Length: 200
Image (tube, rainbow, N blue to C red; front, side, top):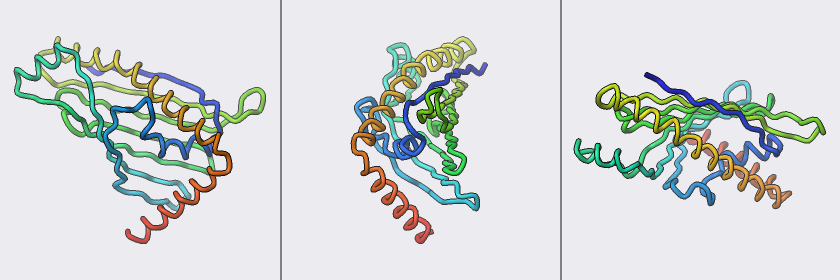
């Protein structure tokens, strides 16, 4: 049985800052479990949208009952690899992302999709509206065990998404404090993208 988690949130920052912070969000004090982030592919399509594929390696903590169960099955889990796909549409101020684990998928497959939309609030201040959906599917053991695994993931994601929001807020606040340096980040990203395209 597949379980879902859905949430919405509003970031009190402009779309430009948010889109830059998205790629700069690691490391931050709320994501100490992130081991590494590598860009695998990047290109701009005919509509001016930036497509990026990244590999993220994370450490994870498991409850004792999981550790005992996996140990008895000869499974050792210390890190997990996450594939992150993102599309940034600067013209329409929209971002679409998908993250999914590419290892231990029999134990549990976790797929998170999110959309971010630049907007303004009632006071005409720029904001970014976020909508997230996460689904969990386990194929490990009997039905009761699968259900327990999916329920654990569903419960844990609330804490993870909260930390993710805190981390994004931290990075965006640092960018806002630096003011004009945001333009330097933009130029650096454009330069890196141009180099990727030349190599491709």
